[in-house]
Structure formats: C-alpha cells, structure tokens
Image (cartoon, rainbow, N blue to C red; front, side, top):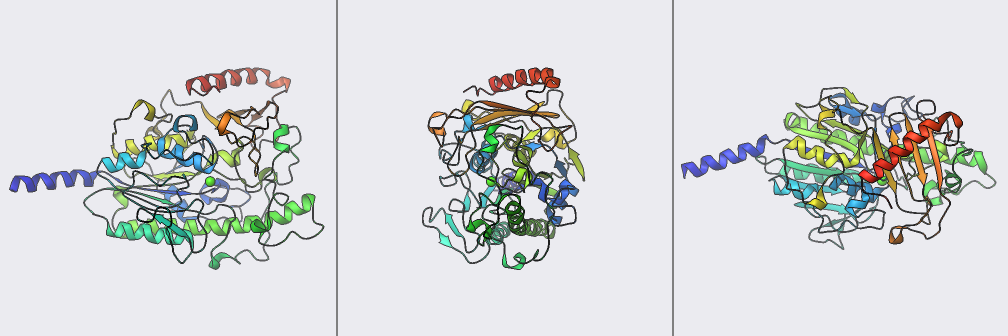
Length: 486
Ligand code: CA
C-alpha cells in the first residue's frame, strides 16, 4: 500500500513537472495591428494597441518572420495541428475536412497524460478529435450569442448569450479552475475575431467615431507592373465589400479611390474593435495564470492562423503570398527557455508549431511515416541559437484555385530573408480547385530589402537575372524536398 501510494505520488510529481501549455490562436490578426510588432499605419498613434499580447512578447520571444504555409483558415489550422503542409495533411482548401482518423497534437498530448481542451474556433469541418474536452463554434460561429458544438451535442449544439470570444474565454478559465492540478494541461483557446464581417463588442463599437485612422502607403495601389492575377482580385476594399461588411450602404456616386478610402475607414475601425476583445481576453488568461501561481510552469503562445490585409494594396482578406497575408504574429513565453524581450528574425512557419510544442514539453509520440513533420522545432531559436542547417526559405502553396468569392489562382513560391519568388501556376488541380478556369502562368519576384511593400515586380528586370536564376533553382529544390511537384 505504502509502495503504491509512493508510486502514485511519484508519477503525479513527474507529470506535474511537465510544463502546461496555453495556445491562443486568433483568426486573421495581422502583425500590423499588434503593437509588439512596432510601427505600422495602425500602431503608430496608438490606434491598434495590444498591451496583453505585448506582455507575452516582453516576457518571452517575438518572431518577426513567421509565415503561413498556406494562407487561409482551415488549411493553416490543419498545418498547425499536424506540423505538415497541405499536400501531406490533406487539408488543401476551406472545403477539405481534417480526416477524423488523422492523429495530431491533441492526441499526442492526451496520450502523454495531459488534460486537453479546446474552446472557440475550430473550423476544420469534422468534430474535434484528440481533445478530452471541446466546445467549438459551428464553422465560423457568430460574434454575438454564439452556438457551441460539444461532444454531447456535436451537430445541434447550444447557444450562449454574450460576445463570442468573451464567452470562450469564460469557458476556458472555468475549465482551468476545475482541472486536476496534479496533471499538466494543454489548453487551446481559439478566438473568432478579427474575422470578417468584423462585428465589434458593444463597448468598443463607437470607439473610433469621428476619428480618421491612418491609411497604409499602398491603399491606393493600382497593381501596375505586377501579375495579371492580382488585377483580377475580388478583395478590394470598398469595391468588393458588401453591406454586411460595411454595416451601411455605400454612398451613392462614390467610386474608385474615394470609395476605397471611405470603406477603409469603415472596415478598419470594426477590424480593430473586434481585435481589441482578443487582446483583452489574452490579458484575462495571463492574469489568471499569475493569480494561480502557474506563470513559471506554463508555456504561453499567441498566434493567428495567418496575417490579413489591413488595406495594403487596397485589399482585405488573405490568400496571396504577399507579406501582409502570409506573415503571422507569433509570440512565445516558455519559462526557462525564452529570455524576456527577445526577438527572432529566423524564418519560421506554422508547420513548426507542433514539433515545437512536443520538444518544449518532452512529449514524444511515436510518429508513423504519414505523420512525419514537414516543419522543425523552434526550440533552438527560442534559446537564441540558430542551427547551421536552419531553413533559408519558407515554402508556400495556395490551392483554392480561382474560387468564386475571392478568385486567386493556384500559386506557390519561396520567401527568403531578402527576396520572394512567386509562380501563379494558373492550372486547377482536380478536386482541390474551386474552379476549373485556367489562367496563364505568371511569375513575380520581389526584392524585399529595396521594396518591402512588394510594389515592383523585378522578375523581368535584367538587373535581377542572377537572383532569378538562383531563386528559381532554390524553389525547384524546395518543391522536390517537400514532395510537392504537381
Ligand atoms: Ca483565418
């Protein structure tokens, strides 16, 4: 009996030493609207202010160059859970469900003895698997009085009063309060905001009334000298927004630049106002950890499933391989690993999140061949060591070819520390394509040092012949290394 008690105590103590994980993920939160990321058209002047996300950065590490492997919601979420590119995890587009048989980070943590839960946005079509507890929105969910699906009511769900991300945060904190303190936990708190159609909480709804928010330098971009693909976009602020987006009809007679500028103000205010509740909620979680003495044994991560155009190039939405769309916020506080206020400029990706969490917690699942990670653990970077063989380019692939609402052709490319090469393949790929309409193959090359806003395509510039040759070879090698040559 005494021996058994001792053994139980011993194993509980072992588990308790493993760090807890709180992984907070928002939907479409652009680094340009997070103050820890420094000056932007939104943070300068304090229009976008995120003191709580900034707290994680100040007490941990901020990643300046983290990129989504496929910049759209469902595929990015699958890449985060599996550590794999779309062509390996099977989630290529918004229409592809995550295979319920597919094992991922939640299974591995649960099997290692962690208490696991997810609250809020799931958006992977099939019910969450691997988590012991889940309460998630149906598809996108509603900003006000959201419906949650649960294990007991996986189809019908139940509706709750309140603002979605505040309700999810209440649920997450309630779960933490009731958890078994002798076992470590993995808590995923996934926010709805600031996703379209940007419905703010009442308390923020009138915050920017009468205020003019600064525009990005490229708001009135006419896309000259870039691909024809970009000129066919359906995500131009004003022109491609509905009454549902703008919450008011477009003024009669307003068009062109004036319409874009007017709609930008409508849009960006709602965007920032919805995002503010995310930051408030992050603050509530951090306060709870502090009040409960768990700061020293809990890894805290904040990210978003991709970036978002907050007016750059005249756009809203994501999908394109341009910086505002693919660049993700990523701040990590890992006690004993990260140094307070540190920064990494190394190239990171959402396919790195799963291997990072496993290494940080010492959870070691036996991965089958089909579960092998495409990404790499960020732990050396968190320790401020860059391995000699760290990637020199991030590989990108978008598959939702020319979908009706936002026609963006299939494209792939690489982003290095200094350049970006994009191939708009233009050809639909079987059932993965949202449309069968083929568009011409086109290429873009950007010099990110001279042209960080990606306004000048130098693909056919004679001064860039050598750069183009080198990057083309590097892209081909990346495609072959990743087994993605279709
Ligand atoms: Ca998203």
